[in-house]
Amino acid sequence: MKANTIVITEIQDYIDKHLEEELNLNCIAEKVGYSKYHLSRIFAKEVGCTMHQYIKNKRLDHAANCLAKTQMPIVEIAFRSGYDSQQAFTYAFKQIYLVSPQIYRKRTTFEARMLRNYRCKSNANRGIHARSFATFFDGEVKVA
Image 1 (cartoon, helix red, strand yellow):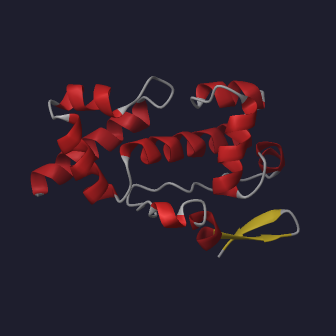
Image 2 (image 1 turned 180 degrees about the horizontal axis):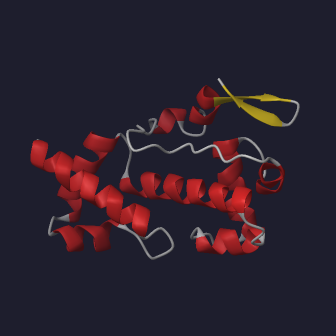
């Protein structure tokens, strides 16, 4: 099991460094020399969510950082985050951060939702986990 943890940590590092590139289970499994089925199982067991969910959430955190620290147009951030439209990006962003990208940008700080030891929620709780991290008060998100 310890070997699996090391492989998953290396995969997470790879994902972190290549967020703006094509990332999917097939290409990552090929890079590490595992079958996509085996890699999918061990990733979900170690991290607590599918690789697709993990990549999506990491990209949204990267997008939130860009929104807070740059003046890059939201549509450009959406495309760099792997979304085909600003509308799809806004929908996904609001599920995690509870505000639109435009409102988020007006805030002065970046609040990362993804941490190395972050465990994704089950599909039954999908979209609800942000509420456990933050509560809304007068347009501000305050960490609970």
